[in-house]
Image (cartoon, rainbow, N blue to C red):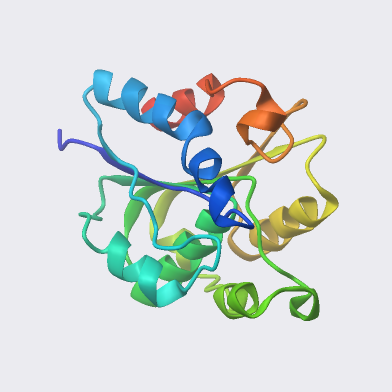
Length: 188
């Protein structure tokens, strides 16, 4: 059996001071848990995520091996990056897991960086190149997050898991850095 690998892409904080939280919370706990189970796990720090540029994210991301045994996990704007990347490159992967997926649906409300980062057409054939798609949301997710999830799900399908009182899946919402529900979906 070929070895699975996992790459987790963090979200995009609104300001540089928030970057540590967005790149931390459950992501570092997950990396430790997966490595202890023999799953090679990468958690790249994306360049200037508070003003995301797709091409810069892509350049950093492509330093890591992505193949049919790869599990990709995105949080918030990391989901948008992964969906855009998979649509653009037509890569085949084992699993795509979107945690609190975010997409700016009304680009008039977004700053220039986010408007450019989120403006892309979702390739609806992505699900034909992925063995499994899972999306996590919460009963108390922001309304824009709930709309984003619907947008992704209507485009690429997948299983939706709703967890109670997890908000946008940040430490301040979850009150923990542990995320066993995601861990079980990755290792199953």
